[in-house]
Length: 252
Ligand code: ADP
Image (tube, rainbow, N blue to C red):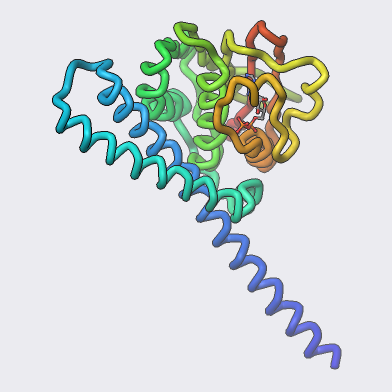
């Protein structure tokens, strides 16, 4: 019966939407969780390594336990992300007016421990101009920036500097905000540059640096930026650092 088929189709679509929504919620929560756990990890590590003053043997034993338990949680969250197909994150999208300066400051705050540990200075260049609000889903914009800052720190050497800057651009008569994350790290080998946004791809020099990675961060970032019809791109030189950029739309 054609009506029955139509009904089934409609039911199926409804279920699919619901399932998409669920993976989306899991992806966003997992990304947020991972960033917070990772911030905690570095703070605990600073205590264990005595970077912020000496602690007693007993205190160290407890903090080590907290560190290990935190590591297990990070592992779990990573598993959640891979099972859940982290790149499905762009499905549900609820844009609103977002203050980009506040967004950047709050993302950078989550990385204070990690950058301190590697003695990396993260410098935020807000620019002179008062920026208009961006019209994006704030959680998704957060995930994009988190991925870029996370990579910049991961692939930078001890004692280096990272610059995050904002500027206003015009594209086809429309205003947009451009966020740039610049590092002086290991860079991306020329031959690998075309593959960098592919799912699971990790360049050899990144693997050698032995930093943990899933090769999903940039795929996720690109999927999100595509959702608001923005651009994401980079300039990089092996051994000479990387500049990653993405754009956010502004409501006219
Ligand atoms: P990963 O979890 O491996 O960091 P990403 O998808 O975020 O995954 O990045 C994919 C690959 O792109 C990385 O494994 C690395 O080879 C390269 N990459 C990304 N950002 C940088 C950077 N700032 N400096 C050097 N290489 C980078």
